[in-house]
Image (cartoon, rainbow, N blue to C red; front, side, top):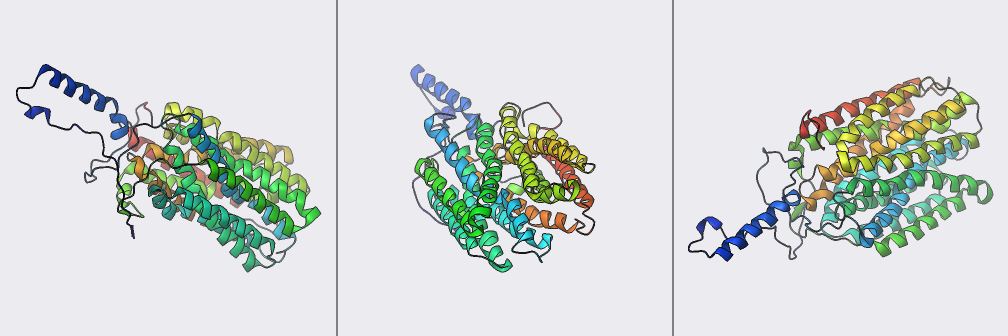
Length: 467
């Protein structure tokens, strides 16, 4: 499927004449040529991507014109980060709050429905959040950021309002899983892709700050629901969340502005990207991240109740520690990623996350889970937040960053779609045993770590180098 749009577009930097064919040139002419060549050489990191991977097996083609004047700071650039922060707060934050909704459904509205069946609501929401990027990425590249952000924000609000009227499983999965999921999908990839057009050297830091909103939303929205639901009821608690999302989205829409567009004949997919080994390995690793890393976030509340005898209120607050730690984990490692490279930070982080995941198995008290939650939240937060920056570093042509992010996160959506329900099916509800789900968590994240290592090695080898 292709998109057609016509518009003027700037040309890449080039020399207007061939210096080898100059005859009887004056000394000033030759000086001017030398100066222009030097300028091109200085900027070739942006045009060609000296530190980026470019597969020689790909057919040569002229890339879309990259941004030669990336601000890397300033009021306008940081306003994009703040706007992106609240869009992610409303998309990922609402998705990350599903654990509170699942606990409520199990005890009230859907008592006779298995936990693994209920988890399909959140899995569908998360899968659409990620998989929507396969469409929104190319549309973003064409310059329709504001259209996507407006439609996505209104769809989320509409979905929450419809959820407030829902009482049966099919109604909930349609409103919360499908409608809210579509709205989230319209926001996620554009809100992180726009940062790559404003930042280069500090791209990972800016992306990490924006992505930290996903964990913060996972703390705030469940707290709002838990506090309001007993007092106002399910319907109004859900509506108030929708109104909060609407207000924050209005701020984002008022400050965000897209810089670069590629209004030309485009396809929704770029199959040639998968001939680049680093990008392919990273896509697999990213899918495994979302397949396994969210198990404690979805089932932590049920685990604490089953193994510690804690009340539902205490259990949800203990799990909030996991989300709070994840907020920090999505910012701090990005400082190092801008210096060392995203893949150099992601690879050891993935291995460390897998080790901590296996350490969840012997935990049987509130204090132990709180300690696990802090460590796992810090590490898994970095694992999730560094993804957009890594894709940006693996994309030579800035004009295609939305498309590549969309493809990568669409694949990750498949992982999320099957991951958490699979873990839920491994929980033994009769005995309260979570061991199989815990092993699933650790094994999947460990496999992710090896693919992340493969992406790093295929890009720069085993040498000590920025990747």
